[in-house]
Length: 368
Ligand code: SF4
Ligand code: FES
Image (cartoon, rainbow, N blue to C red; front, side, top):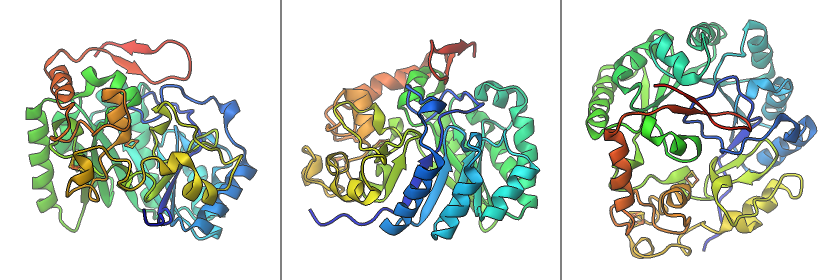
């Protein structure tokens, strides 16, 4: 295997704490408590190490990164060491003063999530009253501050019918980009699959909406579109390939090849408390296990797409088959393809209740 290239981007998950409770949250089912979070000095060191390693962009995320009072200090440091800074936020904790502090620290871009185009539905999906209203106000503040805005819209069977309105909303808010991302089913989203998985007819309509809007809004609004694996014939190149472009640091300081990797058993993911990012990126067993093509089973190993999709998603392979080293069932060549067929039956069943994300305790449910 040739030597790995340096990572391009770091997802800094500052905290799992969040005022929202979205049922498709990409955080693990076992959420970290605030007391387990690494401190400011450790994050400052890690940001310096990331820049030295060759990382170009840092995405401050969570949970909700604004729960950390040191966010502006981290942005300032990231800027000073030459990293492009992006804030991925629900927006509900942002106000004019906090935004001004972040802009002064050098923040360059904001990604703001919207749960739906319609307030009552958006608040129900977020599990927080009046969150939609607050987000509308925050989007205006971001644009007033002169920052580029991306709208993050996670789509599923309970909001897909309003995709045209979501795209119109992004346009109205002055966003330059909207990311229309179908739910990916691991962690909380897997627990909520029946409530979220769209039918093939919904998916086809959504794809047509995106294609029409892309033509109509060319040069005005960029529309990124992430399709659901469950209806794909070939998997996505998850994270651009394991340990190839991307690293993720959890609130407690675990260094992961993707946001869902903590769901995989049999891994001892290293911590920033024990080793430098360079040691972890190049030398750790966890990053090397699924790097490149040598680990692949057949038919991936001799497939012409093996260096295009890098075998798909390890977390999805584990979530569906119980073995992270198997062919991703999103691939039509997978021997486990029937698992997706069974899962798609969820889309035809009644939606069921949401299992809302929460730290500790029994999962909360609400009628859909
Ligand atoms: Fe990708 Fe493997 Fe499927 Fe080929 S067989 S398309 S490498 S997942
Ligand atoms: Fe972990 Fe795809 S989300 S490899």
